[in-house]
Image (cartoon, rainbow, N blue to C red; front, top):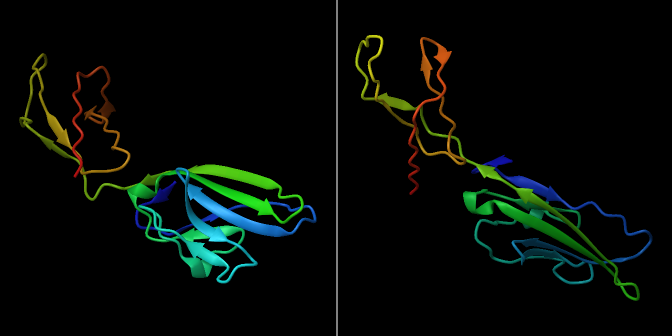
Length: 158
């Protein structure tokens, strides 16, 4: 997991077992976004993809550096390693990147009275700032967690 706005480096570890490297390609959701081919000039190429900004200066055959991570950066990433002829062996590694976004502020409780009597019905609204994933909210009465409440959740994004 990585926080929105941070940079992240994805690694692709492989052992060529004496074979010569032909290429390393990186994919997100099945679309290529970075390629390293030692025999080409330039050896590194990046391809536009939403949520993926490659820092080619910090990327090489075994890692790809991504900068300015956004929520769109979440997803399955795959590296594909191919050896030179005559073998043309292929090795594939994949993993999932989850991006989170912390709320910018504290939850706000509305609709309460200064005091209640035993048996009173309490109807409160709690609003929490946007977060990804949505925040888990827990109700307390006199510092004791309250369970079995009737709750309705509405998520607003945008």
